[in-house]
Length: 254
Image (cartoon, rainbow, N blue to C red):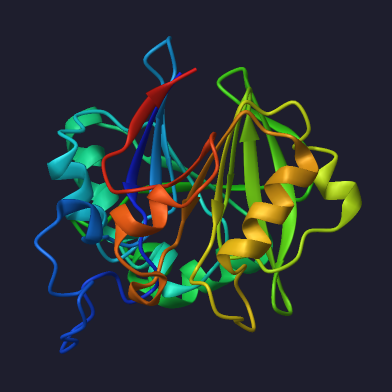
């Protein structure tokens, strides 16, 4: 599979509106972060994304995505769902509804936020989606086995996903032992690390490092990064081998 990190920033993105810190004013491309999303393209050509945040349209244009078969949602927060309207471009290109995989509570949030999509009448040009209910149990999409991993975003249950040797976890500050077992054997882990200082609902960099070490992953990329983390090249240079800060448009294959 080919994996492209479409966005690696926190809910406000980086730079933050009105901020003049050294990160937000940096000219280094790696310090400019859109909201979190990841694109996965299988050898078969089947292509899907995890989350459609506010930057989804631009992410699709920047990555030159011409085909999208499905969307998986981790949770209902706007920085992960707000761009769902733009799947209609793929409805037009592919002449079919978009398959959307989400838990019941996320579906309720989508129906509330995008009521015009689900309430009828079928107005011309609105997104066409097929909702598929998932839970914390493995499921398959086009014969691709996907293993959900339940993590805690303070008091909110969020799903991470494991696809083969790749695991993606965002918006977490706690993972129970039984869920960590699902990640063992992963070759590449992308996991959130908001900043160095303690936060109520996100792993700090040290907490994310400790979590990754407890699993024993070959390569770890830290995502959902705030401007408070510091300059990319400085923080990345201080990390151990096999651990790196993620950045937008980072691409790898497994």
